[in-house]
Image (cartoon, rainbow, N blue to C red; front, side, top):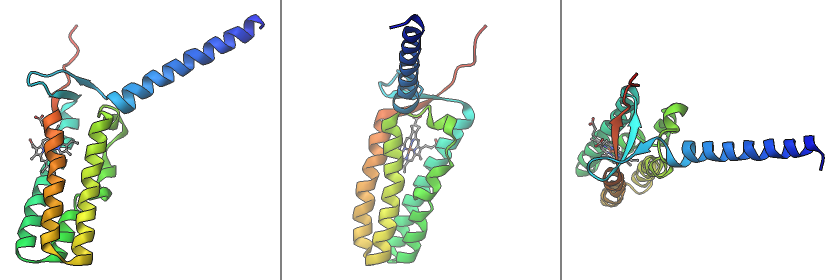
Length: 160
Ligand code: HEC
């Protein structure tokens, strides 16, 4: 092997390691750290935290509306409330924020949007409000699982 060839391989391997490390931190680990209550802390800027928590409050609003509409046996009302937090709304997260969220968090989050769509579909096709309440009860396990595992903490400003 010539010297330049060896250099080429060396660079290729270095590049591969850098790519793998970046993919690991960006896609799988996110920007996380330990926290005082044992949950994994996700470190976000105030703006990013606001965005995640705004989405959370939309989840809670949807849960209330779905129960309310189910009590009134109002299937179209359920569909509307559930679709408001379905997959369609999940695309609004900036890439920079995506990179800070751990993979398991993203999966749970996407899974929750998906379940709201599924619930909307059940309400639409079966008009069975009892089924909707069962869907909702299963879906709420996603909320519980994620809240048990993660919290959000503010990014510390750089100290000189
Ligand atoms: C993928 C993870 C995840 C899922 C799924 C999830 N949450 Fe959250 N939620 C969080 C995190 C993290 C926080 C911040 C908690 C903290 O910092 O202590 C939060 C906070 C909240 C808050 C507080 C909002 C505020 O303004 O302070 C509400 C309400 C909430 N979630 C509702 C829900 C509901 C309802 C669901 C299910 C339909 C849900 N969440 C699903 C991760 C999740």
